[in-house]
Image (tube, rainbow, N blue to C red; front, side, top):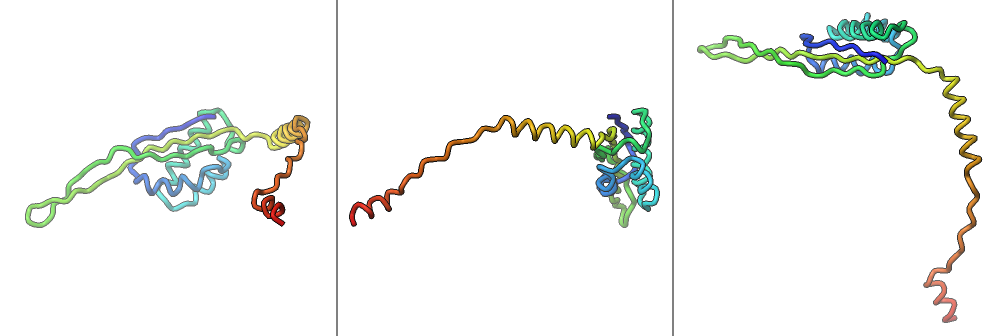
Length: 147
């Protein structure tokens, strides 16, 4: 597993999170291809982070999957715009930190074998239980005694 962190990107974290959710769990090569055609500003930065994470691990893009893509809020730049009568309004310019983790794809054939092996071991270890004794409820027992 390898990581890439890009800090202080001039992009709103809420807008970047919309794109990050789409990419999680995807194959890295497929994710970069789909991000290439997205019109959003954040898509370019997230694609860059994914390619950086793949390079950091020394993997090929087709053999890894995007394990997590997290967007955190960074520092907010505050500016002022002059307004009427000598007043001013605040302009917030948010920044983001993007963290991408990629992991190697595990072979599904090996997973199936291990699951089948665990299931067969579970069958061997289970024991049969004795049936529970039947008890008569008190209402029925008293009704039978009275009649």
